[in-house]
Image 1 (tube, helix red, strand yellow):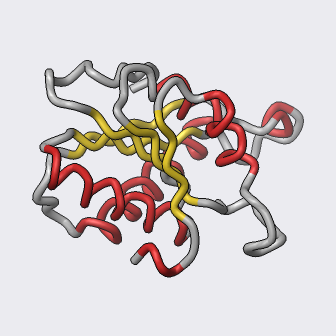
Image 2: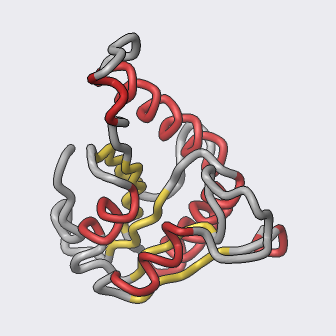
Length: 153
């Protein structure tokens, strides 16, 4: 699904959570699931991905390959966080946009946007907030929850 509207599937509240396969994003998804159990919300799990410009220079890896990799990572992350049969309403959305833009767009009308404090692209450990988390904190149209560290489990 390319476009996600936070209230598209029902009249229930929506919690949008960003997943990139990192341990922090799996913790964020668990946090979102706990909130959904308490509030009856729908959890929309969003993975944004973008095709690097180098694909057009040396097309050994296709656009479909990038999308398939992102879909597999999204599916694995949901299973890792919630099991094969979640006990809450979960919708998975793969969006062909940079992650920060995909998340902000998906969060329109959501109760919360939940992200991990550091994702796959970070190299400085726990020293700072990740770039996607920092962006959504400043630009999201709803309350943002940043799940950091192991204590979140």
